[in-house]
Image 1 (tube, rainbow, N blue to C red):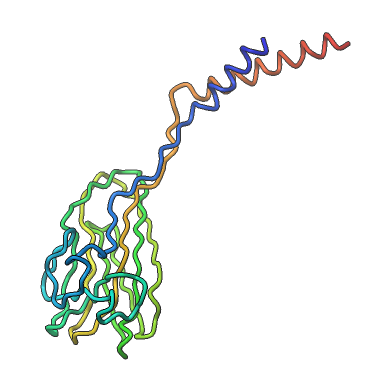
Image 2: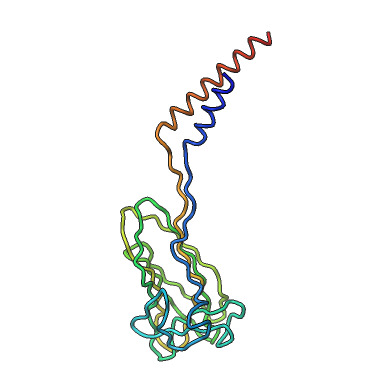
Amino acid sequence: MRRLVFCLTAAAGLAASASADVVVFNDTFDLENGGAASLNYTGFANWTVGGGTVDLIGNGSFDFYPGNGLYVDLDGSTGDSGLLETTTTFNFLAGITYQLDFELGGSQRGDTNTVTLLVNVGLINELFVLNSADPLALVTRTFTPAVNTSGTISFENMGGDNVGLILDDVVLTELATVIPLPGAGAMGAMGLVLGAIAMRRRGGRMS
């Protein structure tokens, strides 16, 4: 009886399976252009630049945040800020929670800038306003689509004066979910009942 109770209880404990977090997208920008900064850069591996320009800076060149490798100035050196958008269109599943992490910092050159973050279609639409001296800091957003959908991630600096907010370390993660297996409730209930029977029999022998 003890062995049967143990087996049933263990099976009940396994009746809910937790999936692991899955990193869907990760870009530090550090491998761009052979690790060298470049103004008005367009050769991104994972992004397109539209409507203007952005600068790939850092790593010793316009290095406003030393120790962070390369990062992106979202207002390039043409006086026309660009739209940085992922080349990948992501498939987002209904009921699954996704987490978007990125680092955003002030320009460090005396001005205030506004950046629009979009996760299309309609999943995130948010403005970020940072002062020049604001540090490079982690921003985390989560979203859970109501229906299956697809879309890109984009960042766009408003205005155009060659000085924009700094973007680094963009990560998109599909968060773990708990998946109940069929019959989990019945299995757990059976384990409890048999456990109670075993305790009663043990009590009877002791008396």
